[in-house]
Length: 172
Image (cartoon, rainbow, N blue to C red; front, side):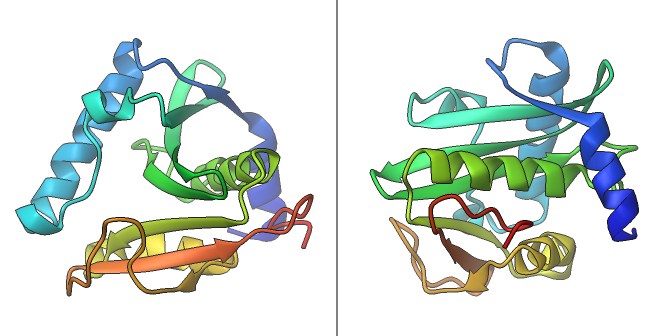
């Protein structure tokens, strides 16, 4: 996708806080959890289920193209200066259209608004997770050591982004 197409996709997608009560978001996240479990050993699968996503420390956003759910992502408060990206998912039919980049940019901007100085994430190390790793690297994330309660694991890769107030990854 060209930068122009990606910008056009982001302009057409509306990102909003989601209370997880709608069937489309519950179905997308349940499918996400199931697919993560299918692609990760049980002790290396860190996707949050619906119950864990309802924790007050977690904010979930859904991305909508008109009235169709296009994707989602979440931000978990680790402490006053550090947040973790969770549950990034693009709905079937929306891959390659800039939805994940839109949600990621929204989450990074929100992390800055909250005053975080660091945003981190864990994703899988296998080939299935390669598109996610490329997305994070394109948006300025760098590989890092495990954070929070994570431990070294051959099935996990960890990424972090140092945040400077008022600077989004696209505005540099």
